[in-house]
Amino acid sequence: IISYCRLNARADRIFRGAPMSFLVSGYYHRYLSHRSWSCPRWLEVIMCICSAGFALTPAISWVSMHRKHHRYADQTQDPHGPKRSLWHNLTLSLYNYELKYAGKLLLKDNLYAFQLKYYWWCIGLAMGIFALTAGIEFWLMIVGWVFLFQIALNLLGHQQGGTVNSHLGSIVLAGELYHRQHHDNPNLARFGLLDWPYHGVIRWLGACGKNVSEPAPSPH
Image (tube, rainbow, N blue to C red; front, side, top):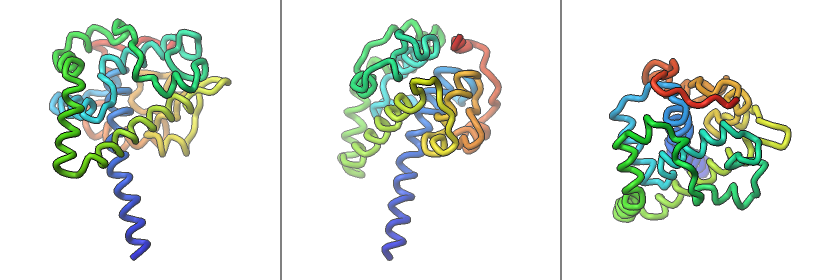
């Protein structure tokens, strides 16, 4: 019975963590920031709303910050990483970055303008829904996972010696710790060998060739 309960607890953590990890890695990072795969519009709408509801940071702000990170990786202008303090990395979502880095395609999309305008309303609505159904503590656990996931990427992806590659870390962090490979080839949908968002979701949703309508800026 104890073993069964432990197995269920682990499965529950995976159920909570995997979709949130995909929202960060597969959706915000690979799709919105780098346009490395073709996402169906209906799925994009669902993920956009869910991202706001779970306080993932408005997409326009997240993409702006990430594209600026690629442009100035490991330099003083880099918005996160080893050049910044621990406190700055922990409170990253509170900073206002230049939205010009988001790119015209995202800035002109009404879906993301709506998300940015009603971001806090979406959070409040999600909290209300969970309070009436699964419980507000369940929502808090999901938001906590998203926060810790992103903080781990910011702190572990870059060390003082440069970008990091780790098979083990990438299993836990949705392929994101193939960070050196990603910075070398930022517009590829697949980050590395043990990259479950790519193998489990992205490759089955459609073509994984680069979307050339608005290529992401080169890290160089």
